[in-house]
Image 1 (cartoon, rainbow, N blue to C red):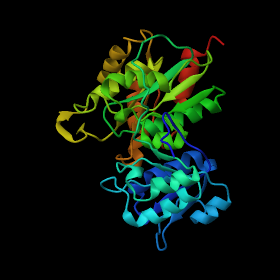
Image 2: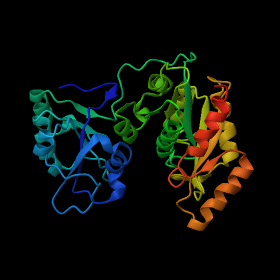
Image 3: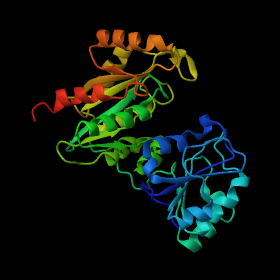
Image 4: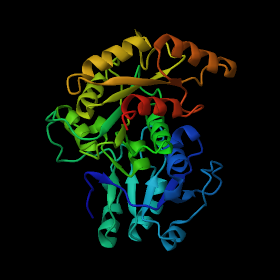
Length: 345
């Protein structure tokens, strides 16, 4: 048994939701099914659980027979701990040789008997929140290929979803694009990545460089953002990610109804224009040619009839494509990338 660093996951997956019935606490599992359904063989839920991810119900034994290689804990309950009543199923899966994957705060090795079961079968225990032990200091050297980074006026405004939707839109436009994950759910969806918020501060930019290495000249890395330059707690990780990513382009993500920084009511949400300007100013340290190519807005707090008018008014004011990536997708932003960066082809 060993811990994998850097993180890499083996498919197909069995998504464990156990007795968690709230979609809010099962966003990891729901996200996996939405974005990587082809990798999900089934779900493991306890009898009576009404939450359904829309994939087959499988026992650990049946999943093993069908070739499942990883059991992924697809829930994040309050406190981020692993329930004792889950442990039997996790140990059973590890005993059969399945990797166990968790993004929770509880370390898998703390579960009595789990490490021993994995050692006997050759399974791997993968704690997503443990970053690589070999992350280098950033060097700031220019890398080949293109990069677009999601930034935000605040935390939890849709950066991961926007990155996934934009990757999909670029691929539809015949652009070679890859989603690069920086958070636990994103890593589970992508199958690889680095949990940026768990990296020691001096190495954040270096981790961003590892996420997005040299690539083909016309390839786009679509990088999931973290935090916000305007958040008093998380601006540091956002700045390190911005510098290490060396983005050629940024997409600003925003919540249409949020009035203040999450958990910090004394800090008002910045204007989108200020967010663009400040992110571009900071990004120019490692890429002087960086551009903002679009705005992604979470309009779920608006009345349905206000959605279109809000985005149209914002687009007129800012002069860039403005979408709700959940409702509209990111085709308009992908088209802008083609026009701004690929027109010479």
